[in-house]
Image 1 (cartoon, rainbow, N blue to C red):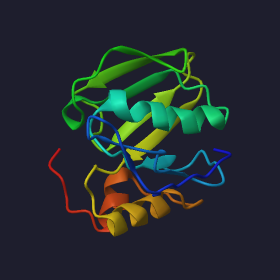
Image 2 (image 1 turned 90 degrees about the vertical axis):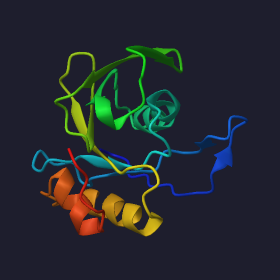
Image 3 (image 1 turned 60 degrees about the vertical axis):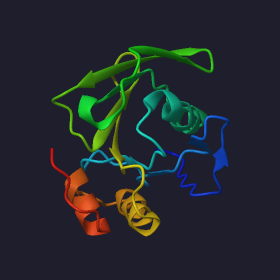
Image 4 (image 1 turned 135 degrees about the horizontal axis):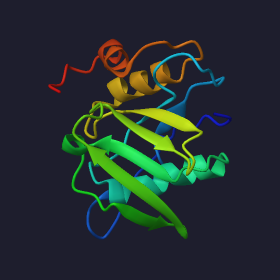
Length: 158
């Protein structure tokens, strides 16, 4: 990735009471083909329809042409198969076999892939910030479970 952005800034409240704000994400710098995690993301809810616009805004601003997202079905609320975000169509695919701690973002031709560690909404801020920092380290070769364990997240059943 060419942009690092970690924004645990103040959160606005929508009329629905759901928190909104800039995506809280960190990218591994510099980009490397080694390792398991390219970025970490700390969404505010398990609702992909609510959370994806902020995440994709960051990626599209960094010239990443993400059009496909795969995720673990058990880790998220039910989501549509397609979404229109900023006039772009994004396809979503939920799978029981996907790593519950990850989402995978790719372009239309699936030439570019970004593997993103998901830090559960409601995670303690200090723990989440450690996970964001660990995932963003240039030489990080840790997998998702290792990053979460090093950050102090209790183990989650798969």
